[in-house]
Length: 140
Image (spheres, rainbow, N blue to C red):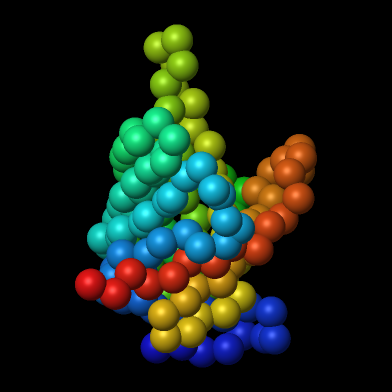
């Protein structure tokens, strides 16, 4: 199910994410390939560094949202079936302390085998520039 919200964003059904594995195809990183797989609650990320030939796997909680949240709402994980934003939580530990970082992507286009998103500034003090990101469905 895909429905257009406006000319810049789309809401889509969770089944689009969970139906396949995804490869980050843009922007291109010549030193790393990134693959994503989703179930209803978690995003599994595999980062393969080509020069060192090392694979790092990470798991992130996520949910879909119709609005850009100011904080990650763990109660929404696994419960929302469609939305305009893909919201993820990156959980890390540094020197025994939990460091949680929320990242978000506004979905701007959904094609049969491609998903186009723009990274969102989630906090007022975020300093990065929004970036267009494309994932391509991995056909197995």
